[in-house]
Length: 549
Image 1 (spheres, rainbow, N blue to C red):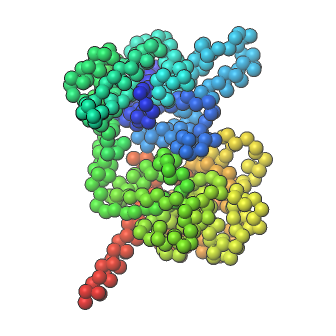
Image 2: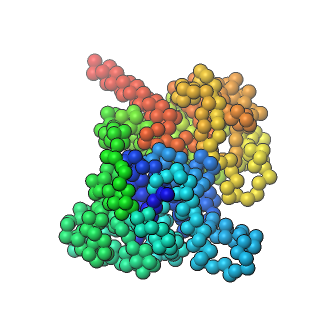
Image 3: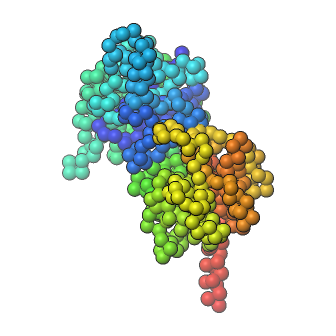
């Protein structure tokens, strides 16, 4: 049977429960244990698929088409394993299941209540992955903050599991904040004491307290926290701010977080941690040999989590190229024909990000035109690919009214159109083309050179697609479909044949990029940006030499 570790948070949100959970899982995995992580979110949305990115950051999509919390991206990036529908559960999904069962008469006429019916469903899902026999340890991150009304049923479910399961089968890790007061020049433990007290009042007592802090914890502070929170001093863990999230597993290893949990779970069959590849990645990340500047053209830039997987994929690709990737945010709403050269002139590459709706699309189209005309490496993802198609149709094919029916339902040139199977769908939640689909790649193309294989599988999240009625016109003029879905003939990849690096994809390659398996498209995009930068510097050097003589 699997063992279970529950990760809770206190004092404030955004402390990094997901990173701590992923780091602990990485350490356990490096010791030879089979590990997975799941996230329980307290909001009533069935999934984050209908949430605005400003509300909740990006919506992460798994292989099996689940729209999930962005923390599942961290889990996959750290563990290099796939998650699924079972790895992300919301209050909405729990209540939906219970209400459906009540309508079916499954409760034999009983009054349906939070306890036991809601908590029983939460427990069932908490144990579901552990019962598959695939894992030695299942980590469960409880979203929200202890004391939130929304989190109470989840905490109660943890309490019941601690009582029902053998003592050595569960452990609770509680993440809190130790704030530093500049006026008093000291770290304060009182918020952590109150947080643990609140958790204990709900019947759950932490085995480990992980303290987010800007300043080092002294032995006296650790002793004080341990004494007043009733945990051993060695189980008070310092989680100092790190320059990158990928340093956190090594920091937690130094603090012996994994060993403390192994001892609590009575797991004795483990090896020394094997983190060679992880350390090699960090060496390349921390000591780059070059630098490129990439423009991220988007419209949710006020919240960086809206493009979390893209930013992390840049980090992975940068490390492979031993290159620091400096990302410049360029808001598409403010790009015009008059200022595009000024805004984009210092870049070595341009990525046009995914999104929905008409806001900012003309700025994206203008940015694509600049990249096409100036030989600037271009990479478009989902809506970014569609904007490249529209730009090419308008400015090369002469189809001045070319557009997507998403933004202009009445366009006379719908080069991007709603997928046939989407036309009769009215419900928005979970109804897009979601999850992994195969893509056949045409030999001899840029895409084939990147993937070095004829068939790949990538994840999708879209309703609109390239209109194949126009494909002949595009290919005769130099923009070719280098990747198609073998079943539906859906165009997955478009690229220019007369450009150093210009490619757009309908899918989301950033979702499968991990530390150990960086996304090939990002790796080659950064390599192309490096070449562009080198040529730019060579031209500058040649010009200065000519002027000197």
